[in-house]
Image 1 (cartoon, rainbow, N blue to C red):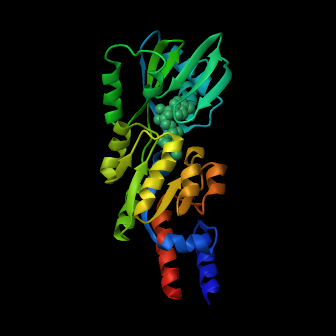
Image 2: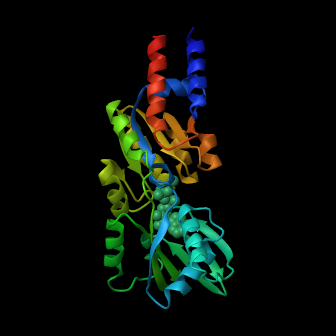
Image 3: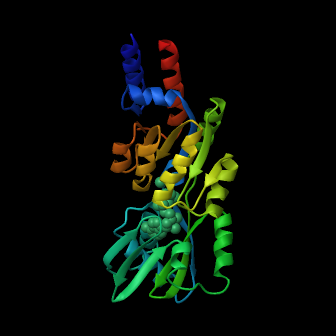
Length: 289
Ligand code: ADP
Ligand code: MG
C-alpha cells in the first residue's frame, strides 16, 4: 500500500542518517527542481581558520586580544575561530561586558569603557571611515576566498582579520550528483560577493551574496516561483528560509532552531545526503504510482 512504501522509505533513509519528517516531506523532495544552499557550515565545513591579522593601528596581538574578548560569548563560526586563534598564540584576552550580536553584521561589547566592534567591512564602514588603501587590501583577501572582519575600537579601526572556511570534502560530488538528477543548485550567503564567488566558482555554483537573514527568505521566495525548491542550512539565520522552502533540510551539526524548523535533516556526513534524499524520494514515489 502507499503508506507502507513511504514508511519503509523513511526508515531506510533514517538508517543512512537521512531523516525525513513524514510522507508530505518525502513527496515534496521527489519534485524538487532547485536546491538553495547556505554557504558557511553547509557547503563549507563551518570551521574557518584565521589566516591573517593585519594591524591598522597599534599591534596585531592587541587587536586580536580585543577581538577575542568581544567574540568570547558568541557561537558564530567566525567568533569561535578568532577565540581559538588568540588562545593558540597565547594572547591574554581581557574581559568584555554587554556583548551584543547584530546577526549577519557584527558583534559588539564594552572593554574597559571602550566600545569594541568586530564585524563585516560593510557594517564597520557605516560606523567609522576606513584608512586609505584598506578597501584594496580587503578586496585582495576576499578574492582569495577569505572572509574579512574589522576590529573597531571606538572609531579607530585596529585590524583586519581574514578567515578561510574550506568546502566540505563531499561538496563537489554532491553538486555533481544533483546535476545528474537534473536539479539546479544555488548558494545563498550572508558573506560578501567576492568571497562567495571565490568559493562558488570552482564548484560551478550560482551565487546570491550579501544577504541579511531576512534577505535569505525573500531570495528563496523569488526562486520558488520556478518550481519546487529545497533549502539546506545550519544556522539560526537560515530558519526563516528553511520554513518557507517546499523542503527545508537541516545539517545535523547545525543549530537546534534549524533542526526543529526543517522537514528533513542530514544526521551524518555532509551535503551528499541532499542528492541521496532526492533519489530516495523519487524511487519511492515511482514505486507507488
Ligand atoms: P553566512 O550566511 O555565511 O553563514 P552570516 O549571515 O552569519 O554568514 O554573517 C554574515 C557576515 O556578518 C559575516 O561574513 C561577517 O562579516 C559578519 N558577522 C556575523 N557575525 C559575526 C561575528 N560574530 N563576528 C564578526 N563578524 C560577524
Ligand atoms: Mg551557515
